[in-house]
Length: 110
Image 1 (cartoon, one colour):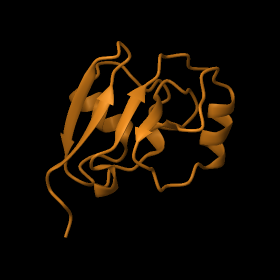
Image 2 (cartoon, helix red, strand yellow):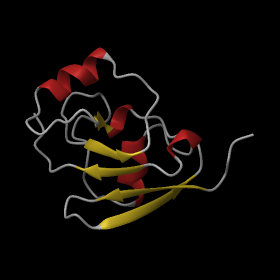
Image 3 (cartoon, one colour):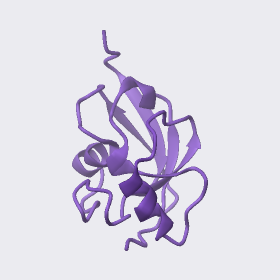
Image 4 (tube, rainbow, N blue to C red):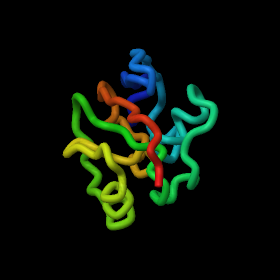
């Protein structure tokens, strides 16, 4: 049985702390959740891991999904990548995101 009321914390591109509530599998990926509920225009490639505009840095918590070759290639082209960098479009919205904290990095897409 999926946990119904999950939440996460993120810092937007202005450094403001925000929170988001979600249900597991309510959205296909983290980019879609934030695009739909909180951000007007984000994710130029619409979730294909090509542009890097949905670049985030995990501050607290862990994403268990492995980085695939497309995501790795895109991240390698960004200037502000850290060891905790991910593309939000490649992170499924599951109960594993409950309690995670991340930062949206300034758009320096490819």
